[in-house]
Length: 136
Image (cartoon, rainbow, N blue to C red; front, side):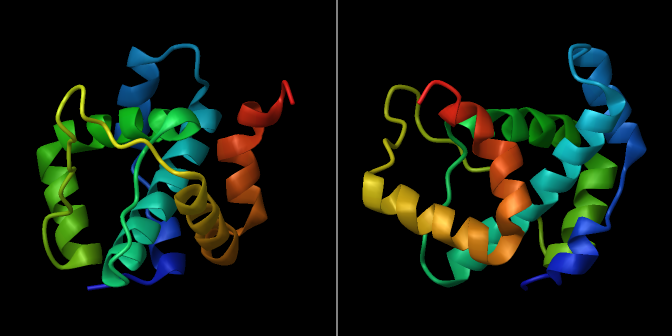
């Protein structure tokens, strides 16, 4: 089931955000709320790309989304309810074997970023990737 992106981006859970901030005090509550919303976008994109037989990874500047996702999963009732409402099933967190992590190729990255721009918009890409280009 592919959820409606707009509805998914409106999903909020301040309990998850507060828990995340407690364990990551360097991130403000407002920044964490944005991060949580960006995670919702990433999850939508992962489901969309999976429907097209494309893989989607959390890498480099997106690893902070993975930390937020871990926090969300720890709140099992909220996470299961969310998964069922928006995806119609449990939204699994796939883990690559340690030491065998996928190394994203340039063409994969270009395809992924193209999908990010087309579906999540330029602001999402700038928030998640701007730090990767500071030293260029």
